[in-house]
Length: 116
Image (tube, rainbow, N blue to C red; front, side):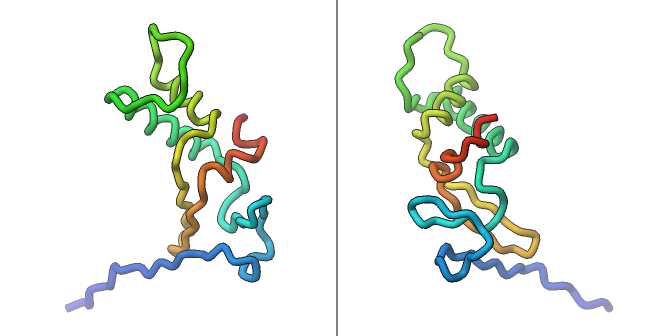
């Protein structure tokens, strides 16, 4: 009878200490992005817009002031909220080995490549 393989993966969080990260980008606050690019990728951007638009369509409060009250499209509102940097979100980037880093959305939005 074959042995069962263990399916438990050990994951470790990558710290954001200065001495641990020498090859990554750093912003004014001292936070370094180790995993992935220093901007919000198009996949992360679309995932955030879709999730926020779904919440808005289900009745979640809108976090920005809108000038027009009629025909509010949840996707457009989600894009405006993302561009206004009012979303309290954290992006978790993982590697195939199971390592991950939690990056605040506000840090990723500081790069000009985040809105392309």
